[in-house]
Image (cartoon, rainbow, N blue to C red; front, side):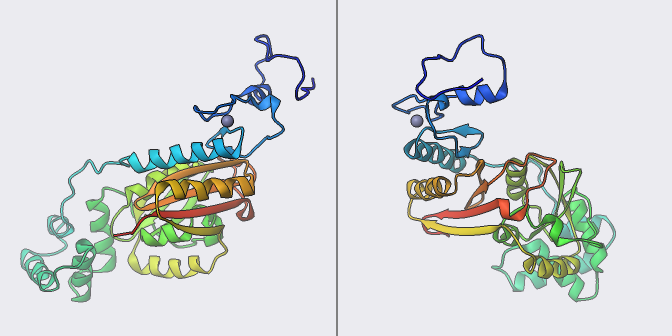
Length: 300
Ligand SMILES: [Zn+2]
């Protein structure tokens, strides 16, 4: 069956429920589209954005702008559990004594004003010989109620495609491995970043299992990760969310990806473009993926 652009055949109700036909008859996804173009009547087949089609660059820009607004308004995953301070977890587990905790907290108070206090407390306890690294790792895993990941046999080439390096580095994370194309193991050193885990689930379509890995193993692995080829990435600092949407939409129009998606990780907007579709369990080739990382306004 052939569809001729401009032909008189109307999208009949008795068309076979064929997915290809469904795609052909789909309308421009911009709700404010003035023309109401159907894909059938347009030679413009792509690009795709979040599984939808827009009839023109202007309509694509509106789709992307709506996605930027959605990401700005989204709260992200809530931290539902009140976490015990790691010092109390270590005390409860019998890994340190009351006196050692008091001493560590006093040392911490002397260097107050710094962030990441759990890590600092753990580091101080390790540095003063009170605590081994594996004891700290197990304490952190209890604090976050998540598994410990060992990094023996870790292969950076298997996970280099997963995320832009800047996001992984900024959240002190490391993709560990993918199981069956459906489950991604994501390691952190001292605190689990739910925002990154959630963004990765939405972006890759995989479930993310977060865990804690020993700091020394992570340091080693991160050095190797930095030297591994990664997807091409571009960075944008935009003066407003509208300008950001315009830049992202412009790149989508230039590259004409089969699919593109937008998520947010804290202050970072992350757009990924796929030259070819790769739904899980298929893993995309590095050269089929491009990332854009954008921020809006002054960062604080
Ligand atoms: Zn349109």
